[in-house]
Image (cartoon, rainbow, N blue to C red):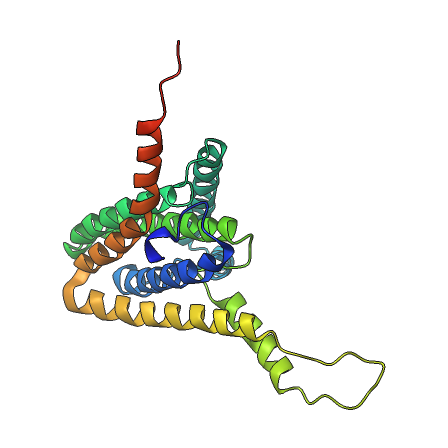
Length: 249
C-alpha cells in the first residue's frame, strides 16, 4: 500500500497515509531548517508578518528576503500544479509523484548549501531560505490537489483548528431538544487529523535531532523516503510506455 500512495489511481483512503508521510517530512524540514538558517519556512503567515515588521523597522534586506520566500513558496505551488496537470492529461500514474522527485533532488541541494553555510558563508543563507520555501510550496500543493484540499502537510494551524472543532463536538453535552439535531463529532476526521498532527510533531523531533546529530546529512533519508513514494507509479508508467505499440508516422 505504501508504495502506491502517490499513484494517481490510488483510492481516496490513501490520502491520509500519504499525508502522514509528507507531514513527517515537512516537520523534519521545518525544524531542521530552523536550526540551519534560523527561520521557519513552511507557513507564509509568519513570513508576511515578519515582512510587515521589518518594513516598519526599515530592515529592507529582510523585507526583500521575505518577499522572495513568499514568491518561492507560491512558485513551488505553481510548479507542482503544472507538473501534475501535464501528467494527468497523459494518464500517467506518477502524476502526483513527480513533484516529490523534484523535492527529493532539492533536499539534496539543500544539503550541499548546508556545507557552504557551515563554512560561515552568510551570503548563502537567504538563498537557502528561498529554496526551503519553494520545497514547502511544492509539497503542500501536491497533497492539496490529490486530496481535493482536504489535507495540508507543511503547516498545522488548520489541523489544530479542525481537531479543536471536533473535540468541542465530541465533548458537547446534548440536551433534550426534540426539534434540534444532535451535535456529533466526526470521529473519522478527528482520528485522521490527529494522525497528521502527530506525524508532523514526530518529524519535527526527528529533523531537529538529526540535524543536531549529523548535520545536513539528515536530508538524505528524507529524500530517500520521497523517492520510495514515487518508484512504483513510475515503474508502472514505464511498463505501459514500453508495451504500447508505436504509432505510425
